[in-house]
Image (cartoon, rainbow, N blue to C red; front, side, top):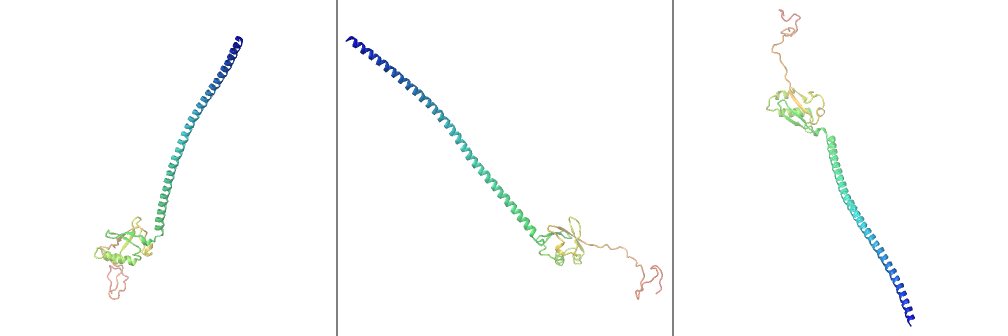
Length: 220
């Protein structure tokens, strides 16, 4: 009976030892598993942190690209607006130049300073001949000093910048340029203070000239 009890105790002890060993192995496995889990969790945390960092970087780059796109769009809009402004200026200048180039000379006046210092614009669309010009000058000098000379055409016209005399034999419209200043001057002829003796003495009756000197006595 005692022997059986001892064997039973040995059997129980063996079973307990084996169970303890199994339990220890199980605990070790579980501990190893927990360590691995912790390691995986740490790795996941690092990956999540890296992902957050990468996400923040990507968001920053996306925002930068977005801002760059907005700034680039504004810059392009400014360039387009500037080009349109330059184009409008060029069109305006071209239009003004073309209009002035195509405009007839008679639409542009020249500046006339008359003999008594009055300045007037002479429009060639209105005054287009020397006859019309002379008539207007006579009207302007009516009641003014110098009217007789204007009526006798005893005046000259000169270009103010060069002093060149205007040739009245030319066509009136060909003598003047737009915005050209013309100065009028009256012509005065100098008369001798002493009478000039004739070179020959004519016959009082028939006016035939004598061959004798003018200071000699001549019998007619």
